[in-house]
Image (cartoon, rainbow, N blue to C red; front, side, top):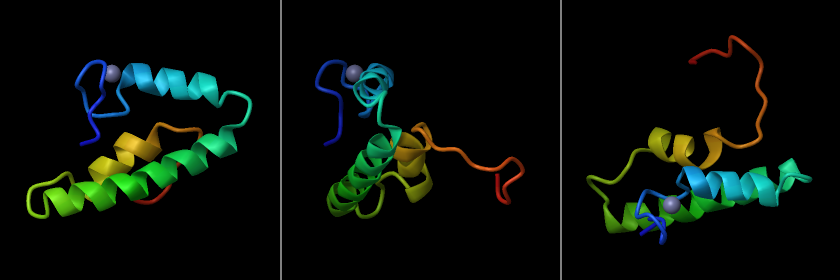
Length: 79
Ligand SMILES: [Zn+2]
């Protein structure tokens, strides 16, 4: 269900994010790829389980991908 086994928060919780950042500290591109893969898997699972009231794409993007090691230009449209 994509909840943290340790604390029950939606995974990755704050602690899980710290651990992931530490684990991938020397290779941020690998973390980006890993997180994008998780987003894909989580969308697959959560939309099948909750087709009508599951989390939206923006929420899942923020949860899995947005906190990762990305850089984007300032003033990007839509932000
Ligand atoms: Zn946790």
